[in-house]
Structure formats: C-alpha cells, structure tokens
Amino acid sequence: MKIADRTFIISGGASGLGLATAKDLHSQGAYVSLLDLNASSGIKTAQALGSRARFYETDVSSTESIQKAVESTVAWVKETGKAIGGVIAGAGVGLPGLIVDKKNEPLSMESIDFVLNINLRGTLDLIRQAIPHMTINTPDTPDGERGVIVMVASSAAFDGQMGQVAYAASKGAVASVTLPLARDLSRYGIRAVTIAPSLFESNMTKMMSVKVRQSLEKAMEFPKRAGQPEEFARLVRDSIENMMLNGTVLRLDGAMRMPARL
Image (tube, rainbow, N blue to C red):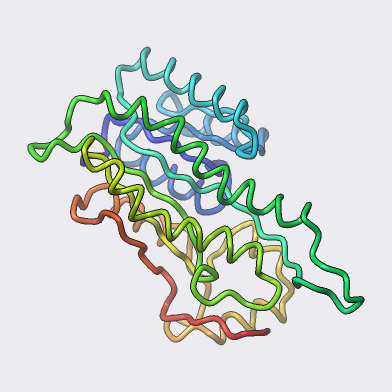
C-alpha cells in the first residue's frame, strides 16, 4: 500500500517510537493524526510537521477519549479527502512489580489494571473504533487492499523478566491477537502486523538506571546497543508497504533474549 496521500492514526505519536514513526511516514507524504496524552509535545510536533499533521490529546485507557480522537480524525479526513490507510497503536507504559514482594504482599490490581488498560485495552479499543472507517475505503491495489494495522508488542512478550508479569501479559496478548485480527479483517483487505522491539531509545528507557540499561545492552548479540527510533519507524514503513506482511509478529531485537533477572 502506498503511504503518500493516506492518513495514519498513531497513538503515542508525540514521543519516542511513535514520534519517529510519525515523522517517517510524514516524510513519505502521509497525513498523520497524532494521539497522545502529552499535549505540549503533541501540539509542537503537529505545528512543526505542518498542514499534513493534526494532534488530538487522547487517553487510550478511555473509550470516550479515543472516540473523540477518531471522530476528529474522520472529520479532518473529510476535509482533506485522504482516507485512513492505517493505525499504528504505539501508546504503551511499563510499571515493574513482582507478583509478590519481599513483604509477601501481592502486586496490586491497580498496578496490573494500569498496564493492561493502556497496553492491551487501549490498543484494541483504538483499532475497533478506527476499523469501520477503513473498511469503506476504495481498494488501493489490484489485490483489494484497504489498509493496515500495526501494533507494538515487546521482547517481554516472549522472555519477560522478573517484575514484568503485567507488562509481559499485556504485550503477549498483543502478539497473540495479531493472527486472529488479520483473519477477521482479511475479507476487507486490511492487514495486521505486530512489531516486538527490544531495548530502544524511548521515554520508557530514559527512566532506567545505568545499571539496568547496561545489563540489557549486554544481552544484545549484535549490535550491542539500544535500537534507534528511526530503525523502528523503518520497519513500520516496511509493514505498510509490503503486502505479504500479515498476521505475523516481527521481532526487532538484535537477537536479544532477555535474562531472567538484571
């Protein structure tokens, strides 16, 4: 599917991997709808990108907030005539916590719900609300393609570490939903792809201690460094343009397999 003159909804689009993706798609002629809680960064980004970008302050754990953002995007699409070609569900959080701590207290459900509501529920909620506006697209290719969904999992979906029960659960669920989502949407010519990055430069990794970061970098085979947001964005672009990528999870991890503990 061509990227130019298509609108892409990007959650978490005001920072990190989402921002890099927005900039990359925009450079290819896309219209980008940026959904994020960080209003200051979102507004600045949209202003910097210009007329082919819009920012909508969005809490992906809220159905009403997502609905407002999607409706606003659809209204913008009606003005531009540039159909929604894809959704990149990039909003996510990490909140470490052992299932039971040193005081024999269980991990709080508030902590678990916080992670699941953003990483899993927010991803599915955004997709389900955006899809009806994609199924009505005029097919973009002789194969009848109408769009693509790109979700973001993590290496933790496959080898989560101690303290990552909630995070691994959320990202494992995103990975596992990829194939059934592709099957559900196949009749409409809409693909579903998930990218599972390892250690990448992002707001989440910026909060890591030097010790934690160095431990993770040692687990990388090659290259022995954190991935760059632009490298993630490039794979998103490939996922959009390569029609044979469908119903699959793409590990982007430098052959990293995370150790049980840091």
